[in-house]
Image (tube, rainbow, N blue to C red; front, side, top):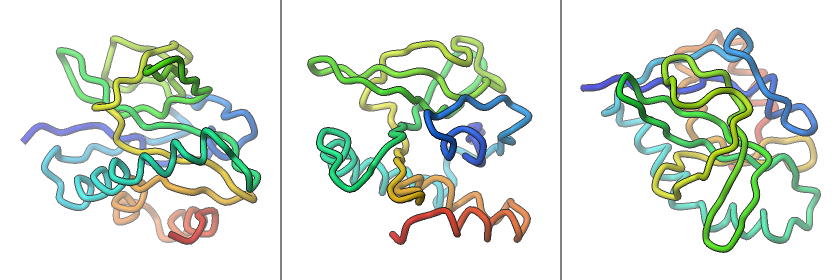
Length: 160
């Protein structure tokens, strides 16, 4: 049962215009077991709905902005999930910038441009009318957060 690190909140980077990057002190990291059923269900839901994300990304028509993907990155030491921002698609490939400071993975750093393998996408989000759409992997982390933080985040989320 290998633990994976998941960026717990999205309060500093994703909710600011232009997806300003976060430092490790801004967004706490929560370790989650790789066999956590709630997290795995959230990742599955995000992956199943990824075609809807790409449709909106390709033709935003209701004020959608600040598109981001959460991507699984593994090195010899650890597995960590990062928000990747400033997305662009070229042919069949997706590229973006690492939007969080690594906690354990050493193969990327904040601001690095990476190619995003589709098999490594574990979540997605964008903003619409000031509300966050997506971010399925945040919900299983609510049980680890203070109640007031959970309520603040829920108020920022669009209805599912």
